Image 1 (cartoon, rainbow, N blue to C red):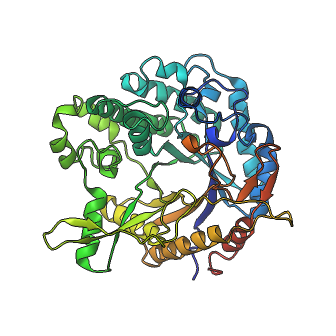
Image 2 (tube, one colour):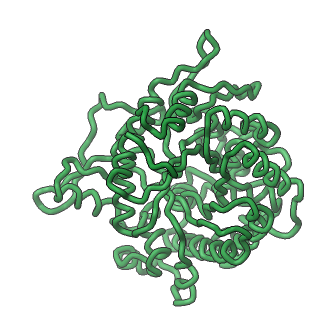
Image 3 (cartoon, rainbow, N blue to C red):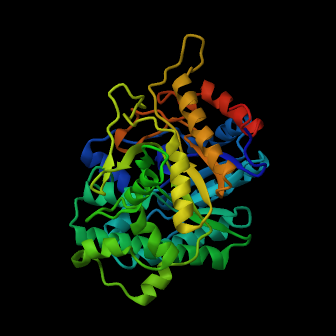
Length: 444
Protein backbone atom coordinates (compact mmCIF):
# COMPACT_ATOMS: atom_id res chain seq x y z
CA UNK A 1 0.00 0.00 0.00
CA UNK A 2 1.39 3.36 -1.04
CA UNK A 3 -0.17 6.76 -1.65
CA UNK A 4 0.76 8.84 -4.73
CA UNK A 5 4.14 10.55 -4.60
CA UNK A 6 2.52 14.00 -4.73
CA UNK A 7 -0.07 13.21 -2.05
CA UNK A 8 -0.37 16.04 0.50
CA UNK A 9 0.21 15.02 4.12
CA UNK A 10 -0.76 17.66 6.65
CA UNK A 11 -2.53 18.65 9.84
CA UNK A 12 -5.06 21.38 10.52
CA UNK A 13 -6.04 23.94 13.16
CA UNK A 14 -8.16 27.07 13.36
CA UNK A 15 -7.26 30.49 14.69
CA UNK A 16 -9.92 30.85 17.37
CA UNK A 17 -9.25 27.39 18.76
CA UNK A 18 -5.49 27.76 19.29
CA UNK A 19 -4.27 31.37 19.13
CA UNK A 20 -5.79 32.93 22.26
CA UNK A 21 -7.43 36.32 22.83
CA UNK A 22 -4.31 38.46 22.89
CA UNK A 23 -3.98 41.11 20.22
CA UNK A 24 -7.27 40.71 18.39
CA UNK A 25 -10.74 42.20 18.30
CA UNK A 26 -13.79 40.37 19.68
CA UNK A 27 -15.64 37.76 17.66
CA UNK A 28 -19.12 36.30 17.97
CA UNK A 29 -17.58 33.37 19.84
CA UNK A 30 -16.32 35.60 22.64
CA UNK A 31 -19.83 36.95 23.15
CA UNK A 32 -21.45 33.51 22.82
CA UNK A 33 -19.17 32.00 25.48
CA UNK A 34 -20.19 34.72 27.93
CA UNK A 35 -23.92 34.44 27.29
CA UNK A 36 -24.07 30.63 26.97
CA UNK A 37 -21.81 29.96 29.93
CA UNK A 38 -19.25 28.10 27.84
CA UNK A 39 -15.68 28.20 29.13
CA UNK A 40 -13.89 31.29 27.83
CA UNK A 41 -11.28 30.62 25.18
CA UNK A 42 -8.72 32.64 27.19
CA UNK A 43 -5.19 31.94 26.04
CA UNK A 44 -6.23 28.70 24.30
CA UNK A 45 -2.94 27.08 23.23
CA UNK A 46 -1.22 30.49 23.15
CA UNK A 47 -0.20 29.73 19.57
CA UNK A 48 -0.04 33.49 19.01
CA UNK A 49 3.12 33.57 21.12
CA UNK A 50 4.29 29.97 20.64
CA UNK A 51 3.91 29.54 16.89
CA UNK A 52 7.66 29.01 16.37
CA UNK A 53 7.62 26.17 18.90
CA UNK A 54 4.60 24.66 17.17
CA UNK A 55 6.30 24.84 13.79
CA UNK A 56 9.29 22.99 15.21
CA UNK A 57 6.87 20.27 16.33
CA UNK A 58 5.35 20.15 12.84
CA UNK A 59 8.81 19.74 11.36
CA UNK A 60 9.68 16.99 13.86
CA UNK A 61 6.45 15.18 13.00
CA UNK A 62 7.29 15.48 9.33
CA UNK A 63 4.27 17.47 8.14
CA UNK A 64 4.43 18.47 4.50
CA UNK A 65 1.55 20.95 4.77
CA UNK A 66 -0.30 22.90 7.45
CA UNK A 67 -3.87 24.14 7.17
CA UNK A 68 -4.54 27.10 9.46
CA UNK A 69 -7.08 29.91 9.49
CA UNK A 70 -6.61 33.65 9.58
CA UNK A 71 -8.63 35.38 12.29
CA UNK A 72 -10.72 38.09 10.65
CA UNK A 73 -10.95 40.14 13.90
CA UNK A 74 -7.19 39.86 14.40
CA UNK A 75 -6.58 41.49 11.02
CA UNK A 76 -9.54 43.90 11.24
CA UNK A 77 -10.62 44.28 14.88
CA UNK A 78 -13.94 45.83 13.82
CA UNK A 79 -14.33 43.65 10.74
CA UNK A 80 -13.62 46.56 8.40
CA UNK A 81 -11.87 49.90 8.54
CA UNK A 82 -8.67 50.18 10.58
CA UNK A 83 -6.16 47.41 9.93
CA UNK A 84 -4.29 45.81 12.82
CA UNK A 85 -0.80 45.67 11.30
CA UNK A 86 0.48 43.61 14.23
CA UNK A 87 -2.15 41.00 13.43
CA UNK A 88 -1.23 40.91 9.75
CA UNK A 89 2.44 40.69 10.67
CA UNK A 90 1.71 37.63 12.82
CA UNK A 91 0.46 35.70 9.79
CA UNK A 92 3.28 37.08 7.67
CA UNK A 93 5.83 35.65 10.12
CA UNK A 94 3.88 32.40 10.47
CA UNK A 95 4.03 31.80 6.71
CA UNK A 96 7.73 32.63 6.56
CA UNK A 97 8.52 30.22 9.41
CA UNK A 98 6.46 27.44 7.81
CA UNK A 99 8.24 27.79 4.48
CA UNK A 100 11.62 27.87 6.21
CA UNK A 101 10.69 24.54 7.83
CA UNK A 102 9.70 23.05 4.46
CA UNK A 103 5.96 23.08 5.28
CA UNK A 104 3.45 24.35 2.69
CA UNK A 105 0.83 26.76 4.10
CA UNK A 106 -2.85 26.20 3.29
CA UNK A 107 -4.88 29.22 4.42
CA UNK A 108 -8.51 29.17 5.52
CA UNK A 109 -10.02 32.64 5.33
CA UNK A 110 -13.13 32.11 7.47
CA UNK A 111 -13.33 29.49 10.21
CA UNK A 112 -16.36 30.76 12.19
CA UNK A 113 -14.79 33.66 14.18
CA UNK A 114 -16.95 36.41 12.68
CA UNK A 115 -16.13 39.92 13.96
CA UNK A 116 -18.57 40.94 16.70
CA UNK A 117 -18.74 44.53 15.41
CA UNK A 118 -20.03 43.34 12.03
CA UNK A 119 -22.50 40.99 13.67
CA UNK A 120 -23.98 44.03 15.42
CA UNK A 121 -24.39 45.60 11.97
CA UNK A 122 -26.53 42.68 10.81
CA UNK A 123 -23.78 40.17 10.12
CA UNK A 124 -24.37 37.76 7.26
CA UNK A 125 -28.04 38.79 7.21
CA UNK A 126 -26.90 42.16 5.85
CA UNK A 127 -26.44 41.98 2.08
CA UNK A 128 -23.30 44.12 2.42
CA UNK A 129 -21.65 41.28 4.38
CA UNK A 130 -20.44 39.64 1.16
CA UNK A 131 -18.46 42.78 0.28
CA UNK A 132 -17.14 43.08 3.85
CA UNK A 133 -15.79 39.56 3.54
CA UNK A 134 -14.27 40.20 0.11
CA UNK A 135 -12.49 43.33 1.36
CA UNK A 136 -10.97 41.35 4.23
CA UNK A 137 -9.94 38.55 1.86
CA UNK A 138 -8.27 41.05 -0.48
CA UNK A 139 -6.22 42.40 2.43
CA UNK A 140 -4.96 38.93 3.37
CA UNK A 141 -4.28 37.94 -0.24
CA UNK A 142 -2.28 41.12 -0.82
CA UNK A 143 -0.11 40.24 2.18
CA UNK A 144 0.38 36.49 1.73
CA UNK A 145 -0.17 35.45 -1.87
CA UNK A 146 3.45 35.94 -2.87
CA UNK A 147 4.09 32.82 -0.74
CA UNK A 148 0.67 31.13 -0.42
CA UNK A 149 -0.99 29.27 -3.29
CA UNK A 150 -3.62 27.17 -1.47
CA UNK A 151 -6.79 28.81 -0.18
CA UNK A 152 -9.97 27.71 1.59
CA UNK A 153 -12.54 30.48 1.49
CA UNK A 154 -15.01 29.05 4.05
CA UNK A 155 -14.91 26.27 6.61
CA UNK A 156 -18.09 24.23 7.14
CA UNK A 157 -20.65 26.90 6.24
CA UNK A 158 -23.34 24.22 6.59
CA UNK A 159 -22.46 23.60 10.26
CA UNK A 160 -21.90 27.30 10.90
CA UNK A 161 -25.44 28.20 9.81
CA UNK A 162 -27.27 25.13 11.12
CA UNK A 163 -25.71 25.22 14.59
CA UNK A 164 -25.22 28.97 14.96
CA UNK A 165 -28.33 30.45 13.40
CA UNK A 166 -31.00 27.74 13.61
CA UNK A 167 -30.21 25.50 16.58
CA UNK A 168 -28.46 28.17 18.65
CA UNK A 169 -25.85 25.76 20.02
CA UNK A 170 -22.91 27.58 18.43
CA UNK A 171 -22.10 31.26 18.06
CA UNK A 172 -23.90 33.56 17.64
CA UNK A 173 -26.45 31.38 19.45
CA UNK A 174 -29.48 32.44 17.43
CA UNK A 175 -32.61 30.51 16.50
CA UNK A 176 -33.77 32.30 13.42
CA UNK A 177 -36.74 31.58 11.21
CA UNK A 178 -36.08 29.54 8.10
CA UNK A 179 -36.44 32.53 5.76
CA UNK A 180 -33.87 34.54 7.73
CA UNK A 181 -31.46 31.60 7.77
CA UNK A 182 -31.82 31.12 4.02
CA UNK A 183 -30.87 34.77 3.54
CA UNK A 184 -27.72 34.15 5.59
CA UNK A 185 -26.91 31.12 3.43
CA UNK A 186 -27.37 33.18 0.28
CA UNK A 187 -25.12 36.00 1.49
CA UNK A 188 -22.45 33.54 2.63
CA UNK A 189 -22.46 32.02 -0.85
CA UNK A 190 -22.29 35.49 -2.41
CA UNK A 191 -19.37 36.23 -0.10
CA UNK A 192 -17.69 33.02 -1.20
CA UNK A 193 -18.03 34.05 -4.84
CA UNK A 194 -16.64 37.52 -4.17
CA UNK A 195 -13.76 36.00 -2.20
CA UNK A 196 -12.89 33.70 -5.10
CA UNK A 197 -12.89 36.71 -7.42
CA UNK A 198 -10.65 38.65 -5.05
CA UNK A 199 -8.15 35.81 -4.81
CA UNK A 200 -7.99 35.29 -8.58
CA UNK A 201 -7.73 39.03 -9.28
CA UNK A 202 -5.04 39.76 -6.70
CA UNK A 203 -3.00 36.59 -6.13
CA UNK A 204 0.68 36.93 -6.94
CA UNK A 205 1.10 33.18 -7.41
CA UNK A 206 -1.28 30.86 -9.26
CA UNK A 207 -3.97 30.07 -6.66
CA UNK A 208 -5.75 26.76 -5.98
CA UNK A 209 -9.07 27.62 -4.35
CA UNK A 210 -11.74 25.62 -2.57
CA UNK A 211 -13.85 25.52 0.55
CA UNK A 212 -14.54 22.86 3.18
CA UNK A 213 -17.87 21.14 3.87
CA UNK A 214 -18.79 18.75 6.68
CA UNK A 215 -21.05 15.99 5.30
CA UNK A 216 -21.30 14.15 8.63
CA UNK A 217 -22.65 11.60 9.04
CA UNK A 218 -21.65 10.27 5.61
CA UNK A 219 -24.23 7.72 4.45
CA UNK A 220 -22.57 4.33 3.97
CA UNK A 221 -24.01 1.53 1.82
CA UNK A 222 -24.93 -1.31 4.19
CA UNK A 223 -23.83 -3.72 1.47
CA UNK A 224 -21.67 -3.07 -1.57
CA UNK A 225 -24.57 -3.51 -3.97
CA UNK A 226 -25.83 -1.06 -6.59
CA UNK A 227 -29.07 -0.66 -4.65
CA UNK A 228 -27.43 0.25 -1.34
CA UNK A 229 -24.83 2.44 -3.04
CA UNK A 230 -27.60 4.39 -4.70
CA UNK A 231 -29.48 4.59 -1.38
CA UNK A 232 -26.41 6.10 0.32
CA UNK A 233 -25.83 8.53 -2.51
CA UNK A 234 -29.47 9.61 -2.46
CA UNK A 235 -29.39 10.14 1.29
CA UNK A 236 -26.20 12.25 1.12
CA UNK A 237 -27.56 14.61 -1.50
CA UNK A 238 -31.20 14.75 -0.43
CA UNK A 239 -32.38 18.16 0.72
CA UNK A 240 -34.92 18.09 3.51
CA UNK A 241 -37.12 21.07 4.29
CA UNK A 242 -35.25 23.66 6.40
CA UNK A 243 -32.11 21.49 6.13
CA UNK A 244 -29.16 23.84 6.42
CA UNK A 245 -26.70 20.95 6.77
CA UNK A 246 -27.45 19.81 3.24
CA UNK A 247 -24.35 19.52 1.07
CA UNK A 248 -26.36 20.20 -2.08
CA UNK A 249 -27.60 23.55 -0.79
CA UNK A 250 -23.99 24.75 -0.54
CA UNK A 251 -22.33 23.00 -3.47
CA UNK A 252 -24.89 22.90 -6.29
CA UNK A 253 -24.97 26.73 -6.55
CA UNK A 254 -21.17 26.93 -6.65
CA UNK A 255 -20.67 24.03 -9.06
CA UNK A 256 -23.75 24.46 -11.26
CA UNK A 257 -25.02 27.99 -10.69
CA UNK A 258 -28.39 26.97 -9.26
CA UNK A 259 -29.90 25.93 -5.97
CA UNK A 260 -31.01 22.27 -5.77
CA UNK A 261 -34.49 21.82 -7.23
CA UNK A 262 -35.55 19.74 -4.25
CA UNK A 263 -34.47 22.44 -1.81
CA UNK A 264 -36.25 25.15 -3.79
CA UNK A 265 -39.42 23.05 -4.00
CA UNK A 266 -39.50 22.24 -0.28
CA UNK A 267 -38.66 25.73 0.94
CA UNK A 268 -39.89 28.02 -1.81
CA UNK A 269 -41.62 30.45 0.51
CA UNK A 270 -38.46 30.94 2.53
CA UNK A 271 -35.86 31.36 -0.20
CA UNK A 272 -34.55 34.90 -0.69
CA UNK A 273 -34.97 36.71 -3.97
CA UNK A 274 -32.69 35.05 -6.47
CA UNK A 275 -31.44 36.88 -9.52
CA UNK A 276 -29.13 35.89 -12.34
CA UNK A 277 -26.37 38.25 -11.20
CA UNK A 278 -26.28 36.68 -7.74
CA UNK A 279 -26.14 33.16 -9.14
CA UNK A 280 -23.35 34.07 -11.57
CA UNK A 281 -21.42 35.54 -8.65
CA UNK A 282 -21.97 32.46 -6.49
CA UNK A 283 -20.85 30.16 -9.32
CA UNK A 284 -17.29 31.48 -9.51
CA UNK A 285 -15.21 28.42 -10.49
CA UNK A 286 -13.34 26.67 -7.68
CA UNK A 287 -10.51 24.16 -8.03
CA UNK A 288 -11.33 21.62 -5.32
CA UNK A 289 -13.72 20.70 -2.53
CA UNK A 290 -12.51 20.12 1.03
CA UNK A 291 -14.32 17.46 3.03
CA UNK A 292 -14.23 17.42 6.83
CA UNK A 293 -15.22 13.81 7.47
CA UNK A 294 -15.45 12.16 10.88
CA UNK A 295 -18.12 9.46 10.88
CA UNK A 296 -20.88 7.80 8.88
CA UNK A 297 -24.18 5.97 9.15
CA UNK A 298 -25.02 2.72 7.33
CA UNK A 299 -28.13 2.78 5.17
CA UNK A 300 -29.94 0.58 2.68
CA UNK A 301 -32.77 0.63 0.21
CA UNK A 302 -35.98 -0.56 1.87
CA UNK A 303 -38.56 -2.72 0.12
CA UNK A 304 -40.83 0.29 -0.38
CA UNK A 305 -38.08 2.19 -2.22
CA UNK A 306 -37.23 4.55 0.63
CA UNK A 307 -33.80 4.87 2.20
CA UNK A 308 -33.50 3.40 5.68
CA UNK A 309 -30.65 3.98 8.15
CA UNK A 310 -29.45 1.03 10.18
CA UNK A 311 -28.74 1.42 13.90
CA UNK A 312 -25.33 0.54 15.24
CA UNK A 313 -25.06 -1.69 18.28
CA UNK A 314 -24.41 -0.30 21.74
CA UNK A 315 -21.05 -2.09 21.61
CA UNK A 316 -19.95 -0.28 18.46
CA UNK A 317 -16.70 1.68 18.94
CA UNK A 318 -17.16 5.39 19.54
CA UNK A 319 -14.92 8.39 20.03
CA UNK A 320 -14.91 10.70 23.03
CA UNK A 321 -17.61 12.79 21.35
CA UNK A 322 -19.77 9.68 21.03
CA UNK A 323 -19.31 9.56 17.27
CA UNK A 324 -19.26 6.03 15.81
CA UNK A 325 -16.02 4.80 14.28
CA UNK A 326 -16.93 4.06 10.65
CA UNK A 327 -13.72 4.19 8.58
CA UNK A 328 -15.43 3.63 5.23
CA UNK A 329 -16.89 7.15 5.51
CA UNK A 330 -13.83 8.78 3.96
CA UNK A 331 -13.95 6.53 0.89
CA UNK A 332 -17.67 6.94 0.23
CA UNK A 333 -17.57 10.67 0.94
CA UNK A 334 -14.82 11.17 -1.62
CA UNK A 335 -16.44 8.88 -4.17
CA UNK A 336 -19.91 10.41 -3.98
CA UNK A 337 -18.63 14.01 -4.19
CA UNK A 338 -16.33 13.26 -7.11
CA UNK A 339 -19.09 11.45 -8.98
CA UNK A 340 -21.56 14.30 -8.48
CA UNK A 341 -19.35 17.36 -8.95
CA UNK A 342 -16.27 16.15 -10.86
CA UNK A 343 -13.89 18.24 -8.77
CA UNK A 344 -10.72 17.10 -6.97
CA UNK A 345 -11.18 16.49 -3.25
CA UNK A 346 -8.98 17.13 -0.23
CA UNK A 347 -9.75 15.56 3.14
CA UNK A 348 -9.47 18.85 4.98
CA UNK A 349 -10.25 17.35 8.41
CA UNK A 350 -10.35 13.84 9.85
CA UNK A 351 -9.57 12.74 13.39
CA UNK A 352 -10.95 11.68 16.73
CA UNK A 353 -11.27 13.00 20.28
CA UNK A 354 -10.33 10.75 23.19
CA UNK A 355 -9.79 11.46 26.92
CA UNK A 356 -5.98 11.49 26.71
CA UNK A 357 -3.77 11.81 29.76
CA UNK A 358 -0.03 12.04 30.31
CA UNK A 359 1.33 8.71 31.60
CA UNK A 360 3.86 8.30 34.40
CA UNK A 361 6.57 7.94 31.77
CA UNK A 362 5.78 11.46 30.50
CA UNK A 363 4.24 10.33 27.23
CA UNK A 364 0.68 10.07 25.93
CA UNK A 365 -0.36 6.62 24.72
CA UNK A 366 -3.33 7.11 22.40
CA UNK A 367 -3.69 3.75 20.72
CA UNK A 368 -7.40 4.28 20.00
CA UNK A 369 -6.61 7.36 17.92
CA UNK A 370 -3.88 5.51 16.02
CA UNK A 371 -6.32 2.72 15.19
CA UNK A 372 -8.96 5.25 14.10
CA UNK A 373 -6.53 7.09 11.82
CA UNK A 374 -5.03 3.90 10.41
CA UNK A 375 -8.39 2.47 9.39
CA UNK A 376 -9.57 5.72 7.81
CA UNK A 377 -6.36 6.08 5.82
CA UNK A 378 -6.67 2.50 4.59
CA UNK A 379 -10.08 3.35 3.17
CA UNK A 380 -8.76 6.60 1.72
CA UNK A 381 -6.08 4.58 -0.03
CA UNK A 382 -8.83 2.62 -1.75
CA UNK A 383 -10.02 5.90 -3.26
CA UNK A 384 -6.50 6.56 -4.54
CA UNK A 385 -6.27 3.04 -5.96
CA UNK A 386 -9.48 3.67 -7.88
CA UNK A 387 -7.90 6.85 -9.26
CA UNK A 388 -10.41 9.15 -7.62
CA UNK A 389 -8.85 12.63 -7.52
CA UNK A 390 -8.20 12.85 -3.78
CA UNK A 391 -5.20 15.14 -3.46
CA UNK A 392 -4.37 15.11 0.23
CA UNK A 393 -5.20 14.55 3.87
CA UNK A 394 -5.20 17.01 6.78
CA UNK A 395 -5.41 15.37 10.19
CA UNK A 396 -7.55 17.16 12.77
CA UNK A 397 -5.88 18.34 14.83
CA UNK A 398 -2.26 19.24 15.35
CA UNK A 399 -2.94 20.43 18.93
CA UNK A 400 -5.49 19.77 21.61
CA UNK A 401 -7.53 22.95 21.57
CA UNK A 402 -10.70 24.85 22.40
CA UNK A 403 -13.39 22.62 20.95
CA UNK A 404 -16.11 25.24 20.40
CA UNK A 405 -19.22 24.67 22.56
CA UNK A 406 -17.46 21.73 24.26
CA UNK A 407 -14.76 24.07 25.59
CA UNK A 408 -11.65 22.21 26.68
CA UNK A 409 -13.36 18.87 27.34
CA UNK A 410 -12.46 17.16 24.06
CA UNK A 411 -8.90 16.43 22.88
CA UNK A 412 -8.44 15.94 19.14
CA UNK A 413 -4.71 16.70 18.96
CA UNK A 414 -1.76 14.50 18.10
CA UNK A 415 0.08 16.89 20.43
CA UNK A 416 -1.13 17.05 24.03
CA UNK A 417 -1.51 20.56 25.47
CA UNK A 418 -1.55 21.20 29.21
CA UNK A 419 -4.03 24.08 29.39
CA UNK A 420 -2.55 25.37 32.65
CA UNK A 421 1.10 25.57 31.54
CA UNK A 422 0.60 25.35 27.73
CA UNK A 423 3.33 22.68 27.67
CA UNK A 424 3.24 20.52 24.53
CA UNK A 425 3.74 16.73 24.57
CA UNK A 426 3.63 14.85 21.25
CA UNK A 427 1.40 11.79 21.61
CA UNK A 428 2.23 8.34 20.27
CA UNK A 429 -0.04 9.20 17.32
CA UNK A 430 2.31 12.05 16.33
CA UNK A 431 5.24 9.69 15.87
CA UNK A 432 2.99 7.11 14.20
CA UNK A 433 1.83 9.79 11.74
CA UNK A 434 5.46 10.70 11.03
CA UNK A 435 6.05 7.11 9.96
CA UNK A 436 2.97 7.18 7.74
CA UNK A 437 4.20 10.35 6.02
CA UNK A 438 7.77 9.14 5.65
CA UNK A 439 6.65 5.83 4.16
CA UNK A 440 3.90 7.37 1.95
CA UNK A 441 1.50 5.11 3.75
CA UNK A 442 3.25 1.80 3.13
CA UNK A 443 3.44 1.22 6.90
CA UNK A 444 -0.34 1.00 6.96
